[in-house]
Image (cartoon, rainbow, N blue to C red; front, side, top):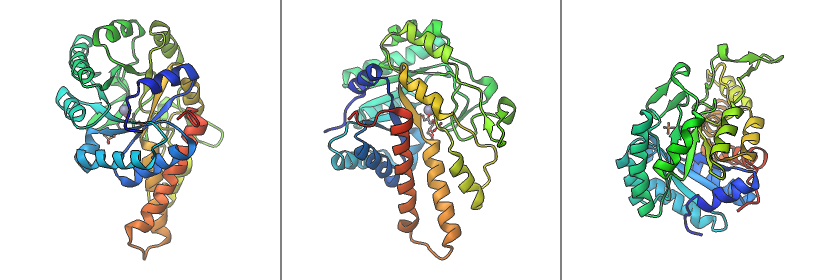
Length: 322
Ligand code: G3H
Ligand code: 13P
Ligand code: ZN
């Protein structure tokens, strides 16, 4: 099956009460770990590429890696998506360069300007058979070189969504309901601690999600910043020379609940990074004499695969939906 857009995927996910995993890819091992899990679990998947990934790995290398995965996994639908497109030019370059979906992230702009920028991308993308994700509201955390503090973040205002979607013509909408980018999603002050001393973050704003869904019936909603920051990998990192105190993510049961609602796409990047980093740190600690990248990237890739499998089955519910 060639690369597809997310249109059909989102329709089925909306009606079926599950979400599609959107995983960030930066190199071959990450692409392989994700797509092998999706192939074995018969799950549709969105592979997404950020501005930073393009700067690191090069547009052509990433497209070719994804094309290789499509050839190896012909039975599952795969979307190639630009994550957090910062401007029209970057979106155009990806649309012209083989992507089937782009995000234009003008959420840092004023409402009218966000509409204007998004509209321009939508016109170009739709003329070329490509779909567009836009964003309203501002998440906290770090994405590419932009860092948004918790105080500067803002929940999506449900009263703005109908006007935004109808004026822009976007195909899906990322909203801010309390998720956040990176591995440190909340400060200790924002959380409580459970009996084991683990930080428990404030719950997502399901009231905002419900109000948005009521105003946009049938319309696919996207959640960014949805890594759960698995504590086994934080522990592995800290036990093998790392220092990541109080790293905390979104509880998986809340993401599961969102997936049964109007949320059709859930973005996960930091969890993959933690699995890869923890595995490699442990490997070097246990094998200080080894220096063959294949030897440490192999277990890292295997752990990414198992982490993705867990997300597909236990969080997103998209296994068996390809
Ligand atoms: O939301 C941002 C994604 O996690 C991508 O991160 O810009 O470091 O590639 P990146
Ligand atoms: P995380 O940092 O929670 O993995 O979020 C990733 C993301 O939203 C990519 O756009
Ligand atoms: Zn994001």
